[in-house]
Length: 184
Image 1 (cartoon, rainbow, N blue to C red):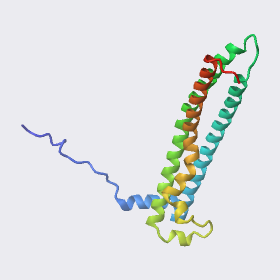
Image 2 (image 1 turned 30 degrees about the horizontal axis):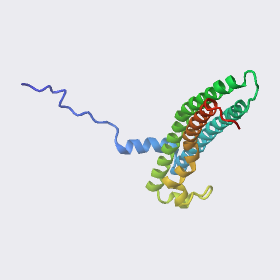
Image 3 (image 1 turned 120 degrees about the vertical axis):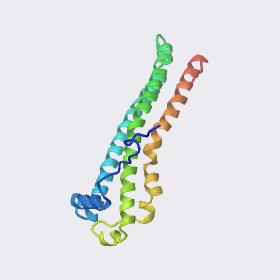
């Protein structure tokens, strides 16, 4: 059995490491320019995450108000049916909203994580960067560490999950309250 010569050939990149470093130097100019770029990207993505979280929380707050108002309906003619149908519908809407908010919030988090990783790699490969970058001082090791920035993003990451649990519990309560004729 003869082997195919094309299958035994290993294809490698013709670009050397020094060529890649030269291309980076042409693109950024200096490590300071690269650090500025990484920080601007982190700031931009953090603003996007903040806007997504704010929009999500605003929508959830309106749904909570609508839910509470619908549960307080005491109309003798149609209030019972209304409070049996509308609160579970609002609960479903809150759960669906949480499920749809999660991917966007998660994507922004992953992009921020990526840029922090790039920044960390730059700072570790260029130890003199911290000393030379006095215009905008570097964070302390605790703040620029992986654990530090991830803690600051946890609120945005946990919010959809917390509201999902909240809506599930409210939905179960609303159905229980209406089917057992609880009087409040």
